[in-house]
Structures are given as C-alpha cells and as structure tokens.
Amino acid sequence: MPFTLTPYLDDSPALLASLPNQLWWYDIRLSMFNPRQIYTLLLWLLLPYVFFHLLWRARKQREYLQHIDERFGRYSAHSDKPIIWLHTVSVGETRAAVNLVQRLRENYPHHQLLLTHTTPTGRAASEQLYGGDVLRVYLPYDYPFAVRRFLQHFRPRIGVLMETEIWFNLIYSCHTMQIPLLLLNARLSEKSAARYARYPNLTRLGLNELSAISAQSEVDAARIIGLGANNVSVMGNLKFDIQPPLAMLELGAQLRTQFGKDRKIFLLASTRAGEEILLLSMLKQVDIPHLLTVIVPRHPQRFDDVADMLTQQGIRFQRKSENAPIASDTQVILGDSMGEMFAYYAACDLTFIGGSLLPFGGQNLIEACAVGKPVFIGPHTYNFAQASQLAVECGAAVRIQNSTDLAQSLQNLLAHPDQLTKIGQAGLHFVRTHRGATEQALRHITYFLDDHFQ
Image (cartoon, rainbow, N blue to C red; front, side, top):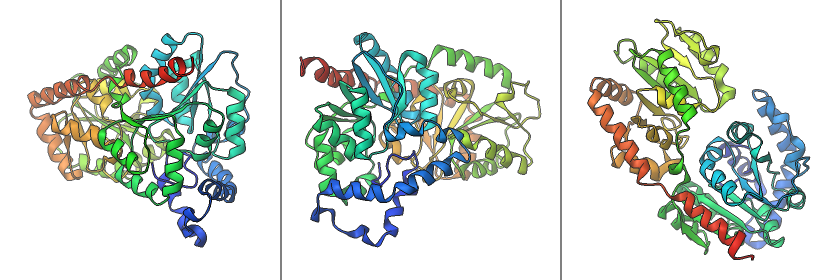
C-alpha cells in the first residue's frame, strides 16, 4: 500500500506515487510540522488533479463520471437501522469479503450492512454478489469535510477497512467521533512499508488511531509494527475462506462443454497491460494440438484493447459475450464478462495468474486452487507474497520466470495428466488448511459491537 498524496483515487497508486516527487517542496520533513495538517494541505493542492483523473479514467470507463457527489461526501442512500460499514476497495476485496458479509448478516439481522468502494468495478462486483441486501456507495476522498459528511450521514456503529487502506483523515475523524475503525486482513509489502517509513510521524499516528489491526501473516504484522503500530494481531487471509459458488461451478461445466470437452483449455486469468502480447507470443512456441486459450483481462475497460491486439496478431478469436458456438479453428476466447472468474477456473485444465509476468505484484491465486486447478505464477507476486510462496512450497503452484519458461512448463504438464491432477489436489489441500480468517475477523468486530460497547 504505497503512500501517495491521493491513495484513494483508484487501484493504480504506483502511477500517482511519483507525482509528489516532481514538487520541489515535497522534501520538507513532515516531522517539523503537524503531519496531518501537511498531508491535508497537499491533498488540497492536488484537488484539480482529482477531477482531471476522473475525466481521464472515464475515457474508457464511463462509470467514473457517475456518483461523483458521493466521492465528496454527499449521499442519497440511507437506513434507519444501525449500520455496520465495510470498505472493500475493488473487486478482489469485495469478493474476499463474501463469507464475512454472510456471517455478519446472520449474526446481526437487525443491522444494515454498508459497503463502500473506490472503483466502479468494485461497486459492480458488490451489485452482482449482494444485490439489494447491502447499501453500497463510494467512500469519499480523504478530505476532512468529505469524510465528516460521510460519517455524519451514515453514523456507522463500526467501520472495517480491508487489506491495505490507511487514510489519515478518515482514521482521525472516526477516532474523534468515537467510531471503532478496524484494519482487517491487512497486508503490507516490503516496498510499501519502505514508502510509509519515509513519513514516520504521520504513519505512526494514523496506525495507532485505529481501534485494531489484524494482519494476514506474521510478516505483514511485523512490517506494520515496524512502522509504529502497537495494536496488531494476525488473523490469516480471508481469501482462503471463499467457497466456489455452485452457480459458477455449473456455469463452468457449461462453458467446458461449449469450449469443447476434447480440447485442452488454458486460462490466462487477470492479465495486465503488456502481458497479453508476451503471452500470445509464448503460445506460438508450444505445439499442443487443439489447444484453446481463454484470456480474461484484469480490467473490463481493456476488453476492446485486447480484442484489437488479437486482430492485429492475426489470431482467430471469439468473444465470450457473443455466446456463439465455438468454431473448431478458434484459437482464443476473450473472456469479456464480469464476475465469472470462478466459472473460467472450473472450465479450464490449468491457468496462469496474470499481473505476475510483469512487475504488477500478481493477483489472487487462491480461487484457482479452491477449484482444484493447477496454477502457474510469474516472478512478480509481492501483492500476494505469502500465499504465492506457500502454494509453490506445497506443490499447488508452479513459478515460472519468463514467457519461454511458461511455454516449456505448459508443454510438459499438458503431456502428463497425472501431474496436472497432483497439482490440482495439492491446491485443494492448500486452501483447506489455511481457512479460518473469517472467524478471526468476526471476533474483532463482535468485541467492539457487542462486548466493548454494551
């Protein structure tokens, strides 16, 4: 979770992280001033960029121009019930919270669940997963006036930030309004920890104004403690608790029939910009009769870009959204649908997890393992470091170093079905042995909702 002056804009903070370094006054030591005031001042100076950013993102995803008022703390949604608030930034966090949301609805039927998001894709995932069972809005940008409006409007009994969210004005406002705010399922890469360490006073203050922090692993906890937090525990990773939805498994079986039961299906899951061209070139190096490759880009706004790339490469492809019979000479299926990743996993023989061939930090490999499918991952998995390392160590995943390595491994594994089965079974065991984070999260939430404030 790299420190940026605008960490709340979207799910690409690396782009924004470099912006402050262009400003000559950015090297002023925050320790000489009230760190939160300096942080807020810099946010105000960047306000024009916020609007430019929304317009820029809206070029390919018009949803960025919707609900702009919510991003500044103005809402029409409301509830007369006491509110439990969960912040799930984008798709990954929203899907990881499925079991937790279900348990909270069971345990607190007289409360209203409020889910906040930062990206349109996260909001769309919430609509698909939860429908009208929850309220959903955008969390406001981290301006004091906006977060105060948000908190005063909804008056949550408790707030839960998921994974990597440290927003200093939001934390401060919850602290002063005596709203318990927890950081759960927390993860912190070595690179992000180093960035936060550049601002020790601000970071330490924010972390210790949180009511509780529970990390995914001992390593994550140690990094957070190293930044000055003193209320840190370890809960495991909520992503291990996710169960493949029956509807998605049934859809996966339908897709397998549609793709062709006699064909080998290779899934390129959650690919990022720059990876597809490398992976398509890799496929030209393998000699696997009737291989069908399914490409599912990480971001829906890139579906058309990938389609153009396939056309330029002269590759015979079909879009999944067309729902047309798959021709025998089709080489690639473009998975241009939202919320169906479990179905794609269920339909394939093996998968490569994108975001890891180039230095994007990787994506979640646990869902593929939960369906019992062999997994390839690249060298760049720092966003899921512990899960990736454990999966490789227990034989649930194969780490490749480059596209040539992937071509060789793909060729070898598809020639040995017994090895595919062995890796898939290891994945199922890997997921089962690491479940339990949902119960830990519930204990934290229950303490503040029931025990501590009775």
